[in-house]
Image (cartoon, rainbow over all chains, first blue to last red; front, side, top):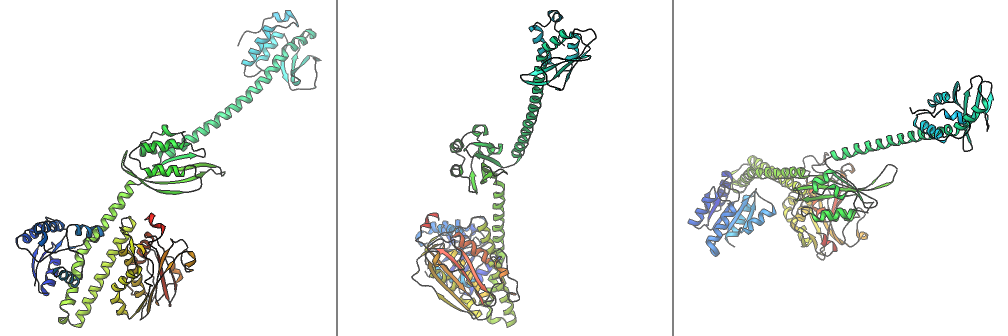
Length: 121
Length: 511
């Protein structure tokens, strides 16, 4: 069981991710904006973060960079989940330090596979 | 009217009175015609009347005919007519004949001069009218050209710039009076001096000036005097008689158009993005139901959820296809070519589609030698091409059929199959996807690669799709230097082929 922080401003998608991960036995904390996600991640280091890009407050990429900087070598893996699906968007995610990039819409099964791949890498 | 020659003329008889002679010429040449001068002369000569008659019988001397006395009007050897006096009774005809003869050369000269003058006047009036007409025509043409929004340059066959409309001045900031009538090199130099004008513009004009065969076009971006996108075209111009006039260069301001294109693309991207969010929930929750709650669903509910999930996938494909077409249209597609192996690309596409293949009960054979040379392509985009072609083969083969993928290398046109387009970059790898499906009727062949075109037959009914797949295949392949073609027999099957240049060719410089 891993502790996963999910930041997503769209409640149905947040619920979808939360349900899928909980069904697989993970402990899920949720945030609906970038500032909240960053505060939670800094206060209580999760095992993995799932971040949307376009959110109120800090954008997902900014949160990703801040967490990678704050934790340094012991930073948890970050997966970006975004509807921005162009090659340039994915490259921007990678340069912000993200470990993986999932484009919406996604299949919940594929999401779980990639979360677990990042956790046990 | 001037005073008449002095009466002393009659007193001097036939002696030459030069003063009177010249005055008469002066008088006559001032007059519009000789006729009005005749009554005055008649008075002077003391005859009843004077008239100029058409040449009658040719004679050198005066002739008496009752009350008339005539003298010929000679100019050099030519008799122009005769001067005929109606003589008062009692006149000394010998003296009168001598006096008439004295005046006759002046009158003859006047006749000649006035005729020539009239001819000249008519001629010059006609010329004047012609010139005015030409001038008006030129004015009209210039006004029309000046009023158009395009900048037009004409370089004649002597490489001289003979026309430049004011728009050229406003597009480039180069005064047209600085370049008109100058050699084209001067124009090229002026363009080169301006930092806001692109080098492509000078290159294009230098390359095309003096070339009177090719028609070309393109696009430039200017940063000064104002940021503009100019669309240009250039072609040789002939007048109706077939005479080469020179070459024109026309420039059109397409800044606003491009801006609208960009806005359209941005709008489509935005809408597509906004569509993804609700679709994520539709697809995600229907998948979640099938993945996590399958054992709790009865068959009917399961079937309905399957349909929802299937259609969510279709919608996602449609959004992705529209985004791709929009990016291709706006030249915003990002191709990242690299040396890659076609066999791996085919394997990846086959892996993506293995579920659909199994569901339909098709067999897939891949006959691609591992020894093929590497190709120069964007692997992700080529997987997309391959996936689209395989997905079509799967979709349009209704019952368990055979789908075969093969590839070979073509080093020259001799290696091409008969159905392949001849314009190819060599060496290239040619990939073919063969199916045993419903095939394509000849009527559909032409439109097959058009956007949103879908074959409508009883066999194809119920086969889902956006009609964008092949349009995307064609664009993606051509953007990578290849070609797409197909052959088909209705109800027997189709073979779609595409070519892609190998990584070894000299074409690499152009990519």
